[in-house]
Amino acid sequence: MNILIAQSHEVARRGLHAIFGEDPRVLNIYEVTNQEDLQEYMPLYQADLIVIDLLLITDITVLKKKNFVVLTSEPNITTLKDMYNCGAIGYFSFNVSAEILRASLNHTKKSFLIDPTLGSLVMKAIAHTTGPTSSHQAFNDYKRLATPLRRRHNYARVLKYFCTNIMTLLI
Image (cartoon, rainbow, N blue to C red; front, top):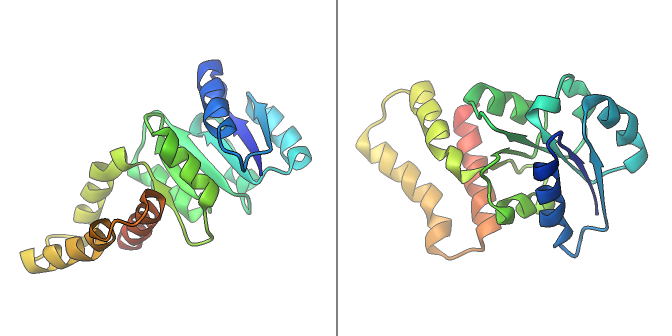
């Protein structure tokens, strides 16, 4: 697997390199530090996954039909929805754990990973979008989403299940 890291901050770039470098499936890790290099080298590297800082995205069409995850220092629900609609496979704050970042290597066409620390942001958006619900309906929604946790599925599968269901409520 080839990874392209698009990150202007050296410390963050080195950290991402170290995180993905620990995974035996990763063969090559390429790095770019600005939008111009991203556009120039993206066709050459043929990355299976692009990990990009939101600040480096000036033209989202460049990333269309690519497998990419977005890192941001200031998450917001509008950008999360935009990235989902543009085909991103994940949206994370810079506080995301290494384990969750590596889970993006297991992506499927229908998966969209969200940093768990963004849970309250997502839940506020759902509450605002769907309006008040009855306590019975809220309990059923909770039960449906929490079932995989009680069955002790592996973390990556539970996260994908949860995020897929959350996005159906948001969009």
